Every structure is written in C-alpha cells, then in structure tokens.
Image (tube, rainbow, N blue to C red; front, side, top):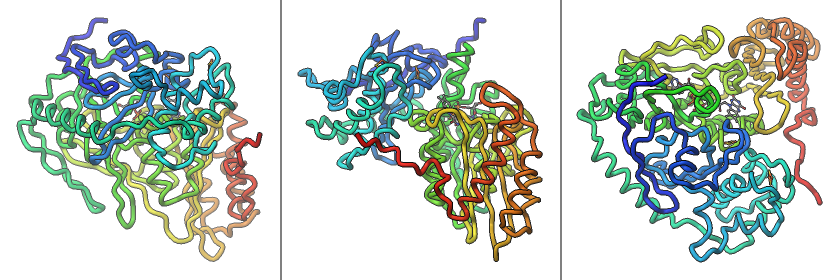
Length: 517
Ligand SMILES: Cc1cc2nc3c(=O)[nH]c(=O)nc-3n(C[C@H](O)[C@H](O)[C@H](O)COP(=O)(O)OP(=O)(O)OC[C@H]3O[C@@H](n4cnc5c(N)ncnc54)[C@H](O)[C@@H]3O)c2cc1C
Ligand code: FES
Ligand code: FES
C-alpha cells in the first residue's frame, strides 16, 4: 500500500559527541534501521525485533529539568524521530580514540563474558548506562542483575557477564563530559525552538486536585504539516490531535513498535506525546498523585513505590529495564491489554484517568475506560492526560502479584492486586484489580463484596477465594489454561492473607538471589 507522503522534518542528534542531521526519514522508521542501514553502524544488532532480547540496546541522553539523564533503550522498537534533540551512544562510541576500551568492554573481556558475541553490544550498552548512572555507588550483583534485566544471552551464561558488570568500577573510568554535553543539548534545543516557534503562546494547562483547564484550540501551524509531530505542550498536543485524529498516537512505542516490526504496519503521520511537558510530570497532592501519561514506567513505578514501598518487587517484574525506560504508564493504560500489569494495581488503588481534548477534560475510574478487548471510550480527538492515584490511608493493606513463566521480562499469565482497609480486625473497604482473567483489566467486584464488612480471618479468606475463582471465566492460551488461572487467583488471595499475618517466607521476591561462589 502506498501512503500519502507528508513532510519529514530532519532528525538531529548527537552520536558519540558528533551532531548528525538526517533528512527524509519516514515517521515509522525504527532507530535500529537508521543506525544500521543509513549510518552503517552495524555494531548494534537485531535479535528479536520486539524488545525482548536486548541485542539492539543503545543509550540515550536527554535533558530532564536541566539535568542530563542517560537511559538504555531498545532501538529496534524505537522510532528514529523520537531521538531528535537527544544524545545517543552505540557500541561504536565507547572506546577512547586511542583504542582504550570502555570499562564495560574491558570487564567483559577480562571476565570472559562473551562467546558468539551477538548479545555482547547490547550488554555493553546496558553496562555502560549503569556505569554512568551509579557514579561512586558500588555495583552489587543485585544492581547488575536489575540493569541487565532486558538483555538475553544464549551461550555465555550470565555468571561471567554479571561478574563483569560488578568489575567495571575497579577499572580506570571513562566518564562522559556531562557539562559539555548538557550545553550541546541546550544549544540544539534552542535552535530547534527557534525554527518551530508556535504562532501562538500555549495557554497554561493548569492542573490541580480540584480541576483541569482545557487546552487552547488555536493552531500551531508550523508543526501541523510534519509527518512526525512532537508537540511540547498539552494545548499543542490537543490541537494537533484535533487536527489529525488519524495520526498514530505514540508514547514510548514499546507496544506500537511491534506493530511496525512484526505486523509491518505503516503510519503516514505519527503524533508523539513524550515531549509534552505537562504529561511528563508526577505531581503529589495530599490525597493523590497525578502521573502524567508520558511519564516513563520506571519513573511512574518509582512514584508509586515511594508511597507504597512494598510494590518495588512488583515494579521490577514489569518487562526489563530498557522497556521500562522507554515505555510509559499512559501507554500501558491506553493500550488496555488484558494482561497489562499496571492496570490491576491502579484499579485496586482506586485510580482515576483524566482524558483531555480541545473540548475539555473528563475524569473516570480507570476500569470505566475499557469497553471491550483492547477497546476504550476515548474519542478520536482525546488523549489520556493523567492517572490519578489515591495516596495510602491509615489501615491500608495493599499488594500486587504477577504470575509469569519467567521472572524477568515476561508478560503476566495472571496478575492480582489487592487493597484492603481494616478497622478493628474488620474489612471496611476492599478493592481488587485482576489481569489475565477477562477481555479487559477488571475489578473483582463480587470478591470485594464477599470481603466487605467481614472479619479479616482465615475463614473469610477461604470463602473469598472461592468467590474469586468463580468470578471470572479466563481463557486458555499459550501462557496458561483457564483452570490454572482460576486456581492461581485464589492462591494469590491466600498469599496476601499469609503475608498480612507475617508469613513473609511466601514472598518469592524476598529470596536472596545473590550467588555465593
Ligand atoms: C519486551 C517487552 C516486555 C513487555 N513487558 C510488559 C509487562 O511485563 N507488562 C505489561 O503490562 N506490558 C509489557 N509490555 C508492553 C508495553 O511495554 C507496555 O504496554 C507499555 O506501558 C506501553 O507504553 P508505551 O509508552 O510504549 O506505549 P506505545 O507503544 O507508545 O502506545 C501504546 C498504545 O497506547 C496509545 N497511547 C499512548 N499514549 C497515549 C495517550 N497519552 N493517550 C491516548 N493513547 C495513548 C497508543 O496510541 C497505542 O495505542 C512489554 C513490551 C515489550 C516490548
Ligand atoms: S532486537 Fe531484540 S530487543 Fe531489539
Ligand atoms: S555470547 Fe552468544 S548470545 Fe551471548
């Protein structure tokens, strides 16, 4: 199919400190394609092409509130235009001009961390990002494992690779010249802003616990003819969404990227939410936190964990680090997969979503967003703007559990999140979200009713387990059978009960995975 050609703005980014300008790159071209085919930088490998193996890992640098942030991402599912204005490093950019290896590379050599070498550039990039991020903090095995959670190796085995990640810090450092890079990025942003200055000043999209003001509907004419639209303010995004309801809306592209690489879908125009300042913020109010739809999964979970530290192990189970760095909370919620992980948790915590368009805002409980399998009630000119998550109150018991075949980088077979409020040993409020058991993420209303007003005892829990197993009719698929899913749902409620009684040994996330050689 030939799609009508829209105007492609040039992409400008620093790679290894050198400014690159690429012209006429189609909006749905991936960063990996551009690196390998246009820039002939073939060190970055393609393994799976779907964000799973990490062979394509690169490091991106961008300014966040004036500070340089470096993060490892999968280039195979990242759209090339999304790195406009950023700094980028591939494995070709790490060694010094005199040939001295970066500590990540040298440590892999010393620890025999590579056999066929296909995965190695990806590991090197994740390790280089870790090196940059930890500074002087010692890299433990646990930290290394976390940083490498998005990288698979088929032949070396992980022990020497983890050894190498821990050894990096003992080698002569090769740190970035951060002040110079910050200046380069600022200059680049300034020149881009001068070229694409909006015709009208965006209205301030004020947001508070009480209410939200709609965005300006005035045109931002200099942006609108571009095939890759990357607005920087909410009013601008809403105006563009109104003007281009057919444009493919993208955030981190960790779902949409697979539509490109696996389903070969083409987009004549893309509308990217990830530069919209209002949508990249987490705001804390006394009763709730408002998480912008374009906040990365990594930052969104950090915000949730700040209020409820017990959720850390659940947060770490979401994909691998490069996917959490690129993907957003808004993308997970809007995509509405029945096996998406954030929604059961957000439902259990009583979260609302705020949808925005040039017509105004509307707010609803998260579960009300979904109308069917991967369908939602968002109008063609609407975007998901914020997710509002209530803060914990006294007497809250809350946890979330994910059951998948692999611990890291795997999709749920079943996900269950629970929040109870206890008073005098009685359940006064129960809120339960479930994934993998219906066509959409769902609230377990019957089980909530079975718990409400009851004493929090083993007998109550046993009855509620029966209700929970009977409440849904999950399908059987490659991840699990319907019967298994039903059984596990009840078992997870049992685990929640045991944990509430102090039997923490049932929590597998608390096992010490440290290897003692
Ligand atoms: C290897 C791998 C592992 C994964 N593991 C998990 C996992 O463990 N758990 C899990 O739940 N998911 C997982 N995912 C899926 C994916 O990472 C998440 O769904 C992610 O949150 C999507 O966010 P995104 O920003 O990348 O969305 P995108 O891919 O950019 O967009 C997804 C959808 O949301 C829409 N959208 C995005 N932002 C908005 C907005 N503001 N308003 C309206 N619509 C919007 C897009 O139009 C699109 O339809 C995994 C993906 C990969 C590749
Ligand atoms: S090629 Fe496997 S994650 Fe990108
Ligand atoms: S060295 Fe061969 S896949 Fe890792």
